[in-house]
Length: 178
Image 1 (cartoon, rainbow, N blue to C red):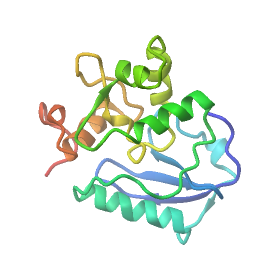
Image 2 (image 1 turned 135 degrees about the horizontal axis):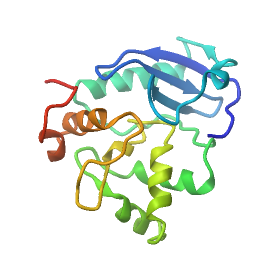
Image 3 (image 1 turned 30 degrees about the horizontal axis):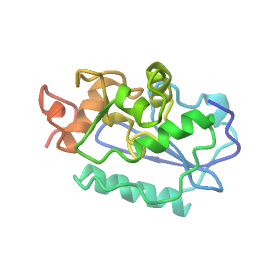
């Protein structure tokens, strides 16, 4: 993760654990579960400012509440994905085109980006997505449609898919109950 400047942050609860939201002057640039892989370190968080009145953070928190209530609408607020490389940003923007309740494989995503041999690089970029849930990396599955990799943990990935009505989310018990 590239260094992040001073950001505005908001902590919010979710059915899947506490979440930190972060916004830059450009838009929403972070959404991490507390124990998520590839999240910001404590040192990176030091200059960040809690700001419960920040309009982008308030909008994201309201959007998440609607999401938890089963209203999986695409995020329409401003995004700042500048922490990633140009390739990572292209992958993250492609994730925004996967509708709720649907999924793509890492290979399909690589082909969509005209990088059919870059499946592993696509997977790495998906795993480093700084705005989980709203940039829906949980909608990417393995080649055979199996549940694979999620920086927030596979149980959370399954719970998010279940909430969106994806069939794989229904296969085994998940954290999110109806």
